[in-house]
Length: 342
Image (cartoon, rainbow, N blue to C red; front, side, top):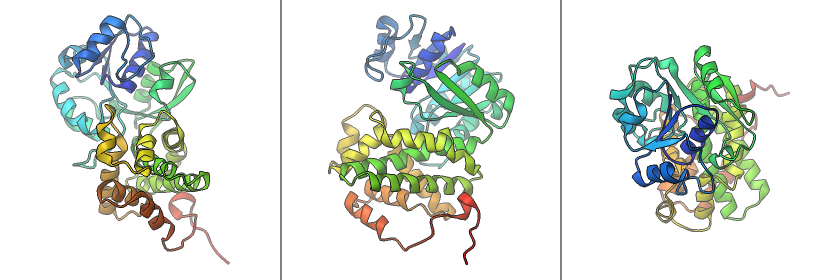
């Protein structure tokens, strides 16, 4: 009934959640060794160590097998691989499917959101039945049933509520939101700000610095969202403030970990080669930078993070650039409406 496309930690956690609700769930993973481990030992030590999976959950490296005949597909593959995987999925997708996009990022080459990619590659599916899923939900905690909350987004309420019912459990609260653009941008851009927050930690700059950076980072997220037609209140919700907070401060966050390592002096190449996990904020920083330049949106933290990642600006010089910017007002029209001064 449910096919989960991607055998990483997040895909495995969502598959476990659905299987424990009694659904027939199958995971697709490109790595045959991951599939063999899930099927034989009911574990996925590579991407979700320490978690036992239900016996009813199976895995396959065949997309045809996992996609065919399913009512729901949940895509969790890294953002830069989604298009190529969706192309492979397309021959086996039927028009009555609901596709749940749980990947977080922006495609570097096109600057497009994940649901845009799925709409293009899976054109046989109703565009409104492609539902975005995002929020402050680390796989490690969802997998052990820690109380969590998430949001599903699509312009059509019946699809949002169907996915809400599909996923909700006593420990996994699911909200609905019609703002699919804002929900996806929140989930993507928070990874960039979390990288910057990790750099602050790696430099040993303290709580004041990190709190200021995260707060101003959310302003940037909302500013770009507004330019793309998102609803500003979305960025105060689970996929904005919620996901930003957990990603910037959690011990589970790959993005903040990578930022800390950059702040300590390691190179980006060394960091990315030291882990099998994808650090989504690295590619998203480039896409967000290009998108902000294209739309003439001011995003100083994002720009400096891009320069640290791609232009060899040192983390400490990046902080100095931010602190020496021209003075300005805190509140801006995009967030609060126009202020008047006496």
